[in-house]
Length: 581
Image 1: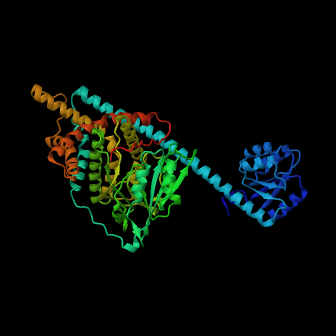
Image 2: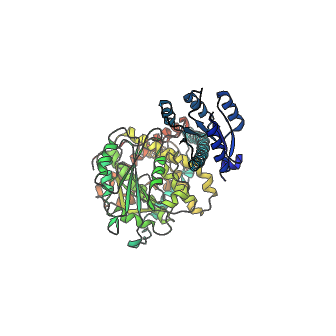
Image 3: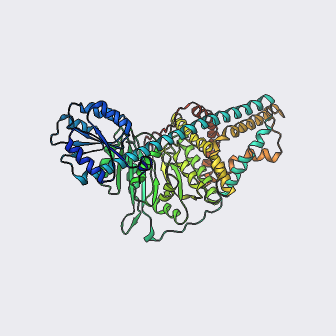
């Protein structure tokens, strides 16, 4: 029995017709199908009065009814939110054509046939019931997200006020000893990650050739005419075969592009058999990357789902290498990320170094119990794991981090693969860079504010809880960390110039202060050394990166401002220009 039947008993069928023969047949067929024939009417006032009284589950509308404006009647019936099936005579005139264009739940031709009427009733009622469920689910989800938005605003306001108040207090009292103790926890975490990253990662157990899983690769694309062709060709050049055939499919989701992305993809489809194209149109398009990925998931055939951005470049053995990390009880894996245009300017170079540092952190987390995290580009996850944790959250600003947290909360494992890399385009101007980073920071804060209680209650080990919280609270400490670095630098300059003059005192034990000062460097030193640079390049990148990281101070304030003033969660994609490779 359907949900509607549980609520209302037998589905009630109401008929709008003045044709006694048709009414008699409909009544007979309806009752044969064990539905309730709930009456009929053919005058407008009587029609609406009875619909109000009966609350039918389905309405038959005879288009040969007399003395009624059918178009107006059909429009008025829409207000009742009841599915309508048209009963159409032999004559199809302009009015009937307009009614059919208004998307009724279906139509039947006279003379009415028993089997066709019964099938149409069942389909219309079931479809309408599912629509009601979908609407209720969507409304509940929107209400949930609105509630989360309020929580995020209040938590952001509290965090901003707390951090600013502490800094002002330190300046006025000329004492920041408290800061040294507060930062001891992230300091120790940074040092632990640094030294754990040195350890060799656990080796993978390769799939037997006959067991290699089929991979579905998703590439969301919105106005990507500058990079989409090179990305698709790079991915489709992958040498990942089974029984001498492609063992993967590439699904590009063209999400409402208004440039030449669609035309480029159509041309590519002609000579790339593994390429599939899904086009989303307004109003469905442009709602967020999570919604796009969920659409592709419904259409995919793979056991493994990979996600690439539309500016991706990979080597031909990439898929063969990374898929091995998913053999066994591993749910997801994130590959290393590099910038193909890293030598374009200072900002691009620093992003390359930054991702090397991030990869170093993920190596440590992999060694600490497969508690890695997924990024937006180069993530591979078992399809069952995605479905079991509720798929991607279309409302989440960083749907990748959101998915990773849900997998970990269910006891899943996520590894990091440093053997192969996905190459992407670094942002080369500061305005676009801050827009991108504000979105990333907001995604971290969303996850922290909403999921922290669940993480604390989760049935996972304490070390894993600590690893997760430490990761998602990264942006929370940035302002205080780099304020501490500024105080240290100012004090050092003061000591050098004015001799034994301290601007702001930091009086914690020497070991606490020493760890706070040096904690930044071991991780980045290890990360930079992995690419075996020259001594000169190494030193330049180390100094430049230290300076670059002070952008985290204005980023904190920009993020807090955005979170406190935004009215909805809005996804803002990064523009890809197709920079120097």
